Amino acid sequence: MPQPILVAVEAGVQTITLNRPERLNAFNPEMLGLLREALARAGDDGAVRAVLLTGAGRGFCAGQDLSERDVGGDAAIDLSVTIESLYNPLLRRMHALPKPIVCAVNGVAAGAGANVALACDLVLAARSASFIQAFARIGLVPDSGGTWVLPRLVGRARAAGLALLGDKLAAENAASWGLIWKAVDDDKLMDEAGALARGLAAGPTRAYGLIKRALDAAENNTLDAQLELERDLQRKAGLTEDFREGVAAFMEKRKPNFKGR
Ligand code: T3D
Image (cartoon, rainbow, N blue to C red; front, side, top):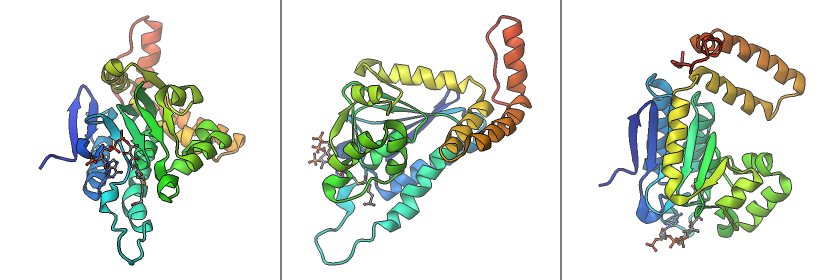
């Protein structure tokens, strides 16, 4: 049986490849569990300083595997169970990971697949890729943080259009709307995303983790609360070896050699 996700660590980057290409990498419970475990290992392993998430084959991820939903009978289907036990813990783990996650969206990203991509810190997409909030097409509500992240990234009007209509948004438009970091030529995607992830893996890991915390907190904080948080996080950053190295390298006009400590 092929593994539903592939994990490899090289040059400080843990690459996670969603690997059910015959189903456009649609999520099943095993895959969601393994993805969550891989992210937990990335968090714990000092040798991992960045994560790169991508998909095998022509799609990134088509969201929940719909063939697992028995809609033929009369029995009520309580979707809150999988949301609570599988999707929400995954999304929380992605946001809490104190290391940067780069996403290389190699093809269509639909439903929860789109929102898992959007939960990454830097999202690159192949020009041929697209994003689809497919939920309303099948009578559902965007989950996996979709209703949280969409209005924040693109504003209410565009979020409503994407969520209510479930139309395909091409990578180029996703980039110009500010939904993702950038769209790149298909044949350059993995090289560019890999270089970005390796660059982050050689960066000040602790500072990156603190930056993620600050950006997440800013969603709900007042300016005063955020200024106080920045003070506290800057204190932590200032106590790292990487801060000393960064300043020393600047003064000595050389490239910093960050250790992630
Ligand atoms: O249930 C819960 O726990 C609640 C949580 C929900 C989270 C969600 O993600 S809900 C949203 C689920 N996803 C969708 O509704 C998207 C369904 N897929 C599509 O709309 C289309 O496949 C795409 C627009 C993504 C791509 O279209 P296209 O034309 O490029 O490919 P295709 O031919 O539709 O798909 C290729 C194969 O993948 C096909 O199988 P086949 O016919 O070759 O054997 C198709 O059935 C399969 N596939 C695609 N998406 C899914 C899927 N199989 C199962 N589940 C899928 N989501």
